[in-house]
Amino acid sequence: MGRPMLSYELERIEAIPEIDELIVATTTNRIDDPIAALCEKLGVKTYRGSESDVLSRYHEAAEAARADVVARFTADCPVIDPSFASSVIKKFLGQYPGLDYLGMDYDAVPRGMDTEVFTFEALDAAHREGFSKEDREHVTWHIHTTNPGRFRTARFPAGERLGDYRLTVDTEEDFVLIREIMERLYAGNPLFSLRDIIALLDSEPGLRSINAGVRQKEYVRRELA
Image 1 (cartoon, one colour):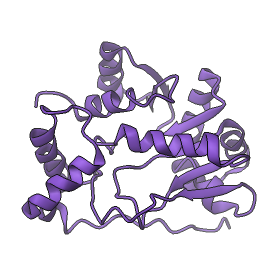
Image 2 (cartoon, one colour):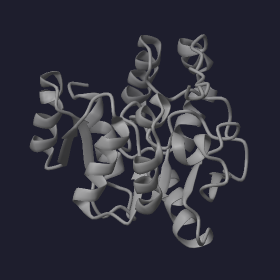
Image 3 (spheres, helix red, strand yellow):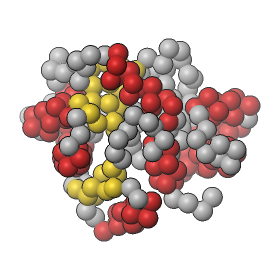
């Protein structure tokens, strides 16, 4: 609809009431200059760091913001539901005292609603202690996978299984589905919810078939030699 996909996601994240400051953590590569330019146009802060060491980029951005709690959203989730993300953040802040990290239970939550919440202290420890390729690339890997027992972690319970819907964008088929969802729902309510998406996909099974053959990548931890 004539706008970059990222602009829709930023619009939705800005609607999450618990977030005090939004920062797009992109790279120093010239190819990402358009991202920085878009953010400047939209009045969104950016932090530019390493492409390969994503953990350092996140750490530096959070440090610059003097954040005590970090909510992480990946830019391949353009239809993130602000109310859903808000419930995850509130759960972390109010119902899990002493928790270091709260992530998604993907057996119950569709891909594309990806929301992680963690303390800056946990991020800082991961930055100082995590040395594997996975630790540096996947930001929270050291917190929830590399060092079990080092951090207090939990997975967000949706309270119900919300269905096997794929709402993230890794492939062309994923993009086509998101475009169809946007074209149907955005005009009526720019902040349409996950429930709205599910109702649409259940009413038009042909839409779900667009990316039905796409399989989520699986990450397997490799031990350091």
